[in-house]
Length: 229
Image (cartoon, rainbow, N blue to C red; front, side, top):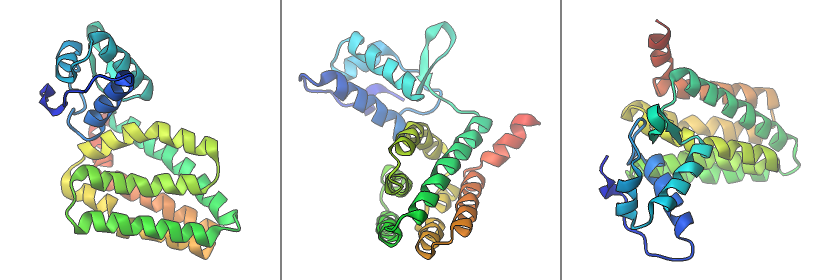
């Protein structure tokens, strides 16, 4: 990708933070693809900031898992192996499964279910209006983020958010039609329904099926087979 996807930044006291946001957005929206080289000089020129500012932003993105140092310290957008992606989904399932259990145990279960259904409407609208991919991904992950927020568990939420960047990269990199199936409102609705019914065991099974289906639709299992062949 050329640096043209990054717009110049107006100088301000928050320049460092704005550079970080611009780079993170370029990665998580697919402007930079997994494996793309991130050159300090090129990025600094297009953002109209110093190389030092870019270097600090890239260092922060390394901590988030979005950027990886390769040979000779060359920084690239992180590329997760199929095994790492499956592990990422496993951790997500564990966190979201705990969120589901805590929501169901809460006296505000029905309110939570209704909030999740409203999030589903936003996801449905994103597809019906033929929104761009970034908006669809935002609505998809927004549902899962809300699920964690509704658990009331701040550590769970904080941990899930650490997975959000890599997850966006994985979804943006997947094939189109199958990716849309994984993100559809229809595939998420049973989770909200199970929470509304208060059936904890059924809700956990539904969440597991949802994650397994997402792995299949994103083509991760197929790639994993090739990786170990």
